[in-house]
Length: 156
Image (cartoon, rainbow, N blue to C red; front, top):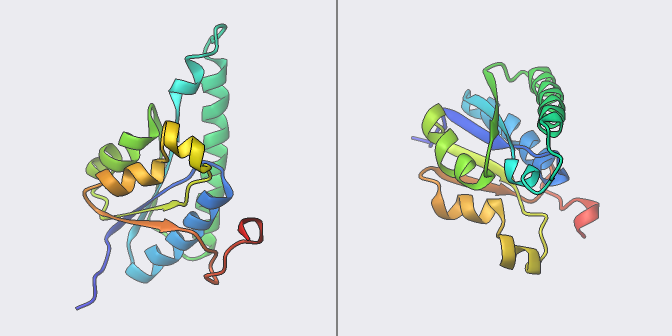
């Protein structure tokens, strides 16, 4: 019997890598007749360094995330993927994507884009994908290619 995933979560952050992961996640969800959870984590640590923070940045980030998630839902429905849930969380993306959301939503596959960080950035802050691979209790698929399994031109 083939492995069949029931709940697939894709983490999106607006990057090209996340876009590739999202499109592949839609296809995998359709093939598995699985629920698709589209998750966006607003990293609140970025706001802590802003001395005049009054809540406006978080509100703007939330509104942008909602619009982006709506666009993703519309695309997925256009691809005949019907069982879709969106999630916006606040905090540190690494543990939220690797542990919290999979537990809360019964996720059995996490899909996310390959890191956009260079070697020095990974050394100091580490990539989300690397953390998720090491800490998630379920399967993790890191997407590096487009729907035709080709490396995007920007990566060559």
